[in-house]
Amino acid sequence: MSMTELIDAARTSKAWPFQEAQRLLKRYPDGVKPDGSPVLFETGYGPSGLPHIGTFQEVLRTTLVRRAFEALIGAKPEDGRTRLVAFSDDMDGLRKVPDNVPNPQVLAENLHKPLSRIPDPFGTDHGSFAAHNNAMLRAFLDRFGFDYEFIAASDRYNAGAFDEALRQVLRKNDAILDIMLPTLREERRQTYSPVLPISPTSGKVLQVPVEVVDAEAGTIRFADEDGTNVEQSALGGRAKLQWKVDWAMRWYALGVDYEMYGKDLTDSGVQSGKIVQVLGGRKPDGLIYELFLDEKGEKISKSKGNGLTIEEWLEYGTEESLGLYIFPNPKSAKQLHAGVIPRAVDDYWQFRERLAEQPLDKQLGNPVWHLARANGGFEGAEAPGAGDRLPVTFGLLLNLVGVLGAEADREQVWSYLGNYVEGADPETHPELDALVTAALAYNREFVAPTMQRRAPEPNEAAALRMLDEVLARSDEDTSAEDLQTQVYEIGKREEFGFENLRNWFRALYQILLGSDQGPRMGSFISLYGVANTRNLIRESLNR
Image 1 (tube, helix red, strand yellow):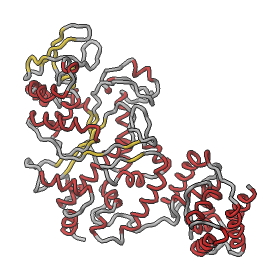
Image 2 (cartoon, one colour):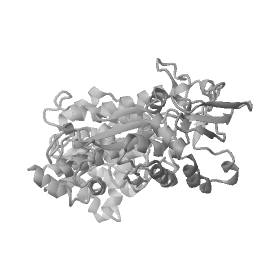
Image 3 (cartoon, one colour):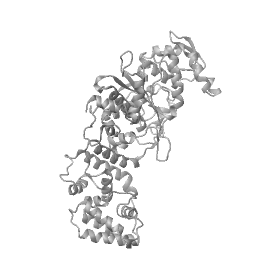
Image 4 (cartoon, one colour):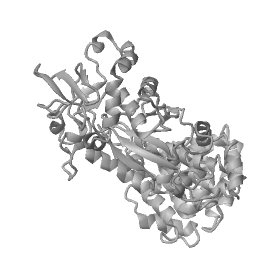
């Protein structure tokens, strides 16, 4: 496939990363900024709580758009025609103590101070609460292979890198107030200021009226916490900006061209877009995405810790499955809990298997194509491993491990796989081995503690006896397809009274596997073994 073919296909693709990239191309039709600098993508992170998958998804989705844009303009990642900045707003004042952080008294004693100036409650060697959380975010982004530049607000504020942009905010103070004050309640208007000074006595970020004394010098005047009038510089880390003003200033100072954000920031995006124009900049392009919800349908919160952590997903699933789950429909809300992991793992492998046989236009809509490009993994249309398939699904592995019980171990699982997969060995099947480890962890945490196999109804017991008789006449090397046919035929027999085959298979899952859903029974019997399956049937009949 030539680069021209890729560009032509990308410019007509309906996949959402290409749709976003096509909007950005209208901003720069030649694929480059007027001054020749790279097109800048940005993601934001508020390190007031531990990073969660909602944080990670923004970096991934933005990267998908970035790579799609490069495909549109015929650029390779190493060409340097784009940049991605992961920005941490660690100058923000801590408003409340998160629920999921150790030593909360450390944070309680430092409320309203910049996150980057609060001691690390985790007791690590990081210099601050924000530095610890920033490190956690970066560690995972590095693990996934993202190409990004990390920028901490504290570094830019303290080093004076934002000073010129801060002077511009001071120059435009009245115009910014004209934008913001009509959006605020009367009580809030009385204390609102675009600039938040940092108290020279307590070190806290103050929400007080501020008078601009000299915009060029960066001097402001305000009342400190004890009522004392203070005149000091707003530069060099002695002040920060209100959130919406800060966001606009960042767009202006860095020259951001693309940034997506959650629908909870819709109003912020509108006001910040107006402010950046006042400053002399331009609002970035970007989509507004729906938020992740927890199992109860509630918004995931860093402070509550009610969502899956990145570490939890990787314990029970894979990096690729996480990317697959995040990829589709960013404008639709998704529930994020452990129950979605098995399906995401199997969906990833289904898309990966299809990729090699798909025409180019279908490849560009395949999530695996985009995920493989996310870390610059390939240049053409075909991703590494395209067409690969696992010899067993993750769902089937979970069923096997569930039957083996909470005490099952890796060697035991591989002994069964050896009967099902030719040449099965962890060293020759590393990706399958990773799923074995994940399945064991998932079973211990979520399946084994609540597993209950119900007793069969009389008609179900009769069908199970017939299945046992059929299996008694089957060899251990009977193919999964033949076993599936035998199970299928039993379910169709009128004397057992199953309204449809779905009811028969559901009964098998509930009685033998302790689950409402399950694999193709022929595949399970072949993997678990004919004799072992007969033992399961006998146990269920004795139940």
